[in-house]
View (cartoon, rainbow, N blue to C red):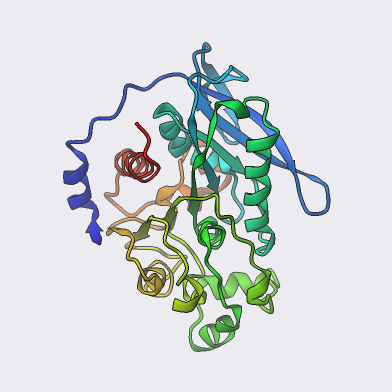
Length: 313
């Protein structure tokens, strides 16, 4: 189902969201393949007192290390884009936590085969080692991914990209993705068998996913979990129709597909004064585009999707 943003706003206007409650936050680590720690951040509903805290390049009103409230909590793994941090999606994380989800973000680099493995390690940690693991419902797990995080989320859900498609794609056109692959000397000889999936994931939100053209229909044929797919109409990084559109066309069961006509690639990132100073491109929008207003609609749609697909009361 294709939906353009104005129509989505109409659909959501009748959806009432629960009153925002306190959100707890804590930091942690999970081991990488070489045994070194990889940073994670965890948001969750809490009854503890909240205060303004610096997290990454942002300030958030959270209860640092406050205990989680409620039980049987659904879990969402949050995956950021290139040269970024899980903290840059704090708006979406807070909205989910306020709605009763536990959200775990993990800091990742561009080691593409490792990224889905990080997802598995995060889930292993949260379900088996997190001190509050008894508060989680292991049957209700989702994944949210932006940009290369969207690519990672689709792989973790069961997608198998074919990197043999990269060379002919980049020979025909020179887009930002091809530039990054060349500049970073990213290995494009990764065999299809190298990709790791996690059957515990039951639903996914993909925002401006990259490398969509690497997924043939056969590579996503086994995916049956529901997906909400977002495309920025003025995306300067993941060019149309080779990314979100390519994924939409390849999937056997068509996802919820939302096109935000005036949005640029980074419209899904939560901006702050500090982030704007450090990485101005992430906070730059086209004239007249209201990022704050869009993100209110976006976050409500993400919460509503996960509530529906993970059967959250």
